[in-house]
Length: 470
Ligand SMILES: Cc1ncc(COP(=O)(O)O)c(C=O)c1O
Image 1: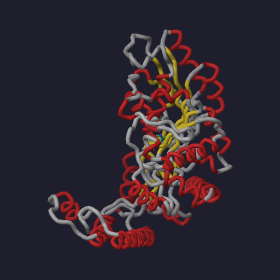
Image 2: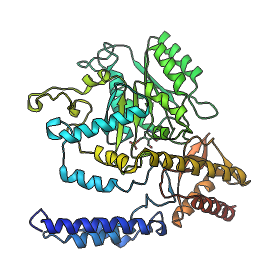
Image 3: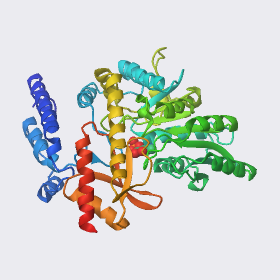
């Protein structure tokens, strides 16, 4: 090693180590416990290591990664990791991450990232095409939360003169109010708080028996607020609610928000990429008619963390919002390329689009359709198994890839205990959620390696563990 650099031979050797590491990781993943039995000595060593004076070889670093680090990691790519909405990665994406780090493009000014700029635009235009958006725009973000935040900033600022750039929300106007369902993700509350709305101005609308926002109650809430002098300005619909995967009635919401001049944002972080499947496309495609749409490639596009995205139907509605001209960032214009610094809150930005672009081109859309159909199938299959099992109860219809269920004869604490035992024994990592106020076990299929045999084994394990607790 030459100071901080590797010479060409060392780089080639390190590349071989990376390939070896990835192959060995994939080969061994299913036989590892999904949740590690923590080796306290290793964790202690990681915590206590002094700042190193001398360097060590790449071989040593990879050896440590392949032993201590993997053994003390949660196996997100394990076929029985079904918690939260966390995907396993496409095969090609880790290589794109390495290549992007080497190129180290700063995707803020086109002058610092010309090809990356074109690639990001291409990815955004392909995403727009999936939702039949014409002439829109967007930006790759770190994830769904940042995408939701960016959308709400644009929605808020679209309400000039009630909200002005110079006065913010302190201009003394009437309070502006946002509506979303009781099932919406907490990143909406977080974003609303960050844009200064105040949580009292976020109205949570109850849902129907399929966990979709009640349009009749939304209409009533907006009418009541308006007659009380408040400014209703935005509705956030969800395409794939975090707990049950419900899809709000998007077409109706598009029509309603259009009539009422309300900004419609669709949080499609979990579910929108299911648009690849003809089974649910009809429920999702209307998301393209919203003013803004959050997508999360690190969920159902199977990207490694981090990669989110926000699309805007009308680029002019958001372009000015993030544009703060300054002399030190001034640069020549180039008709085909954008200054992404003016399209979102970040200045310096990495080349996240590369892993998406490579994955889409390396795999092709047909492979994505097959993968999404595959995870939808697994969820539907698990739903059927649960319904066929008298000791288990399905708590919500299976719309996308989430299955919420519980053991009938156990109370909340014991249902939670079932999850704990599965995790303790390294058998499966399911999520814990509440549906209708009751604790449930939640399996969310976003993993490319899960099979029906895994689903059979999980349902069997749940039943066996529950019988032991009864
Ligand atoms: C519906 C929904 N919105 C937003 C988010 C937040 O996305 P991220 O974790 O990428 O910030 C999630 C995460 O699961 C989600 O399911």
